[in-house]
Amino acid sequence: MPEPRFLVVRLGSLGDIVHTFPAVAGLRESFPKAEIVWLTHPRWKALVESSELATEIWETETRSYKSLREIIGRIRKEKFTAAIDYQGLWKSASLPFLCGVPRRIGFSSQTIREPGVPVLYNDRVRSTQAHIADQNGELSQRAGARNGVAPVALSVPSIQEVFVLRLLRAFAIERYVVLSPAGGWRSKCWPPDRYGELCRKIRSTLGLRCVVNCGPGEEDLVSTIKAGGREADPIAYNGSLGQLMALLRNAVCIVGGDTGPMHLAVALGTPAVAIYGPTDPARNGPYRPCDLSGKAPPLDIVLRSPDAVTTYKRGDQPDPSILEIDVDAVFEAVRRQVESRR
Image 1: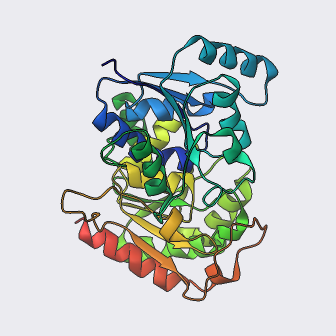
Image 2 (image 1 turned 180 degrees about the vertical axis):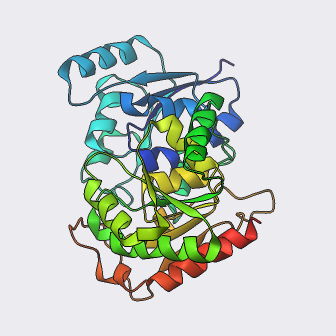
């Protein structure tokens, strides 16, 4: 019997791809010789490569007519057994549909968020799991995987690790805590002035420096944190994806909200102090596949107000529930993480 050929569709973004890795690992575990072609945005090719799960990685830019025409032609030339759409959007579901892939697996209307998308699938899965990574695993099981998810070991190029460690040593930093203050929307972000105060407490009590991971357009966050950090002298870091992975893997812990870098740090094995507001950590929290005993390793501390109301509506101001989490509570969680790694 010939090995199956799977088209995996997960175009972006950082955290969502990280939460797809365990499901594709489950697929790979059951079909070690199968061809798995992962379709993604060019920005995330290196991230998908780091998982070493895909036989090939194909890139497409869905906002480019030329790119779409090329990828549709490429998919049509191949004879895929099935396409698995882990993204669940019109732009991701339409590609296998337009290319005539005979079996198209995706979420049912009870699970998916973008209305109408399931009409493009002919094999629909109604999820019963809470976490999105496990929901993705249900798609893999529908495709024939014995286990929906499996452990993933992400690779970080040694040259990137050397570069980052040398850079940090230039600032006399050996052990450090990474802060990830930004997010796709401000309503799920803890206020930057509190991160600044947290930096001071970490430096004065634990003797550790903080490294603030930032990206384009986040200069206001960084300046507020640095102003609040004062003598703690937090440093801002904005590097390539490979360098970010090296930074995260070597950190004592990461502090952040429901952000891509936080989920990436968890996938790299770094303990997290996760600060949650409107998004539900049961669905979108730090995720580590269970071990053979069926238990996930207790490496992460999730902070969320008991009064938080789950919503995925974007806002430009911090959600009231996330403001209920004070600096002392976050610092105590960081202290526990630091002391557990001594």
